[in-house]
Image (cartoon, rainbow, N blue to C red; front, side, top):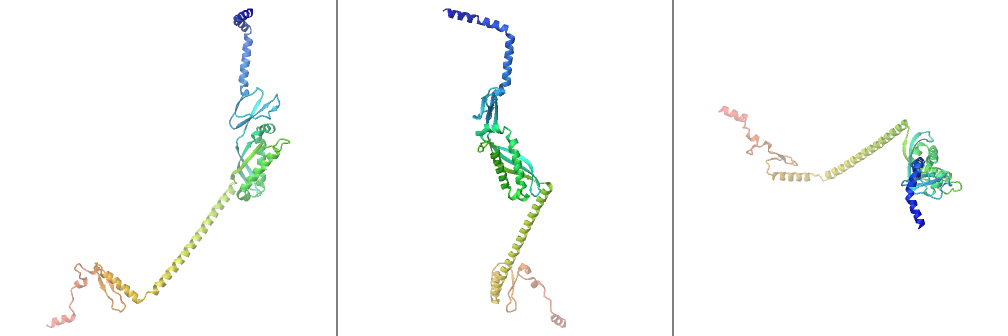
Length: 330
């Protein structure tokens, strides 16, 4: 009972005691509060780290062993001690574009627009952070890739480099760069570990000097004109062959017709045509020739009047001179 009475008495006087203590140490409490709040504001970005989607994190502990090689941090928020540092790496397939000048074996200077895909190995991110660092693309990959491009294009002439073997050139550059990453960017004693991989390499654009570009375009125009001329010649030759075949056909047809075109046949055809015209209702004049082989001459009704009498019949007759002289004698 005495213990509970003392506890109750202490709790009763506790607020008064705390109030008196705070009054005596008010300045110290205010200073401590400012220090704590300011420290939280300053250290909050270093203590709470957000790893976005498509990225992984590697932690560096300066007071406890450096880079943590045994753990890779995933996406989301992570709490760190103030002096630890979290570095993030993209694990998705990244695409980088590069423009550079190259010189072929025949001294043609050209500007290339290149693109390649690269990605970091998620399982070896701690080693990548320790041995290469976050800026491995600018320090290691781009210099080696540039040197490999110039070396491959320098061995070929312009025709081989930019036309027939362009795909093979891209494959050689990708293979050369990938071998460099395997042989030179692996940790010491761990040559089988791949830290970075280049999966594709493409030549997206080629820009020649202005005079060379103009000559290439002129060559293409002349080549197209030559092909058009060949097409015209072939078309003309085919048309000439068609006319020859057509003439030969007409000649053979005429020979066949002339062989059977006898006098009796022509006379029979004329009689049949005359009969058909005579059976028609149109007005007509039929004149027969006096020769043995003559065919009838068919005239229309242009020389007929409405009464069916020709204009020659309507012409008044003129008395002959003999009749006139007899009339005068009487």
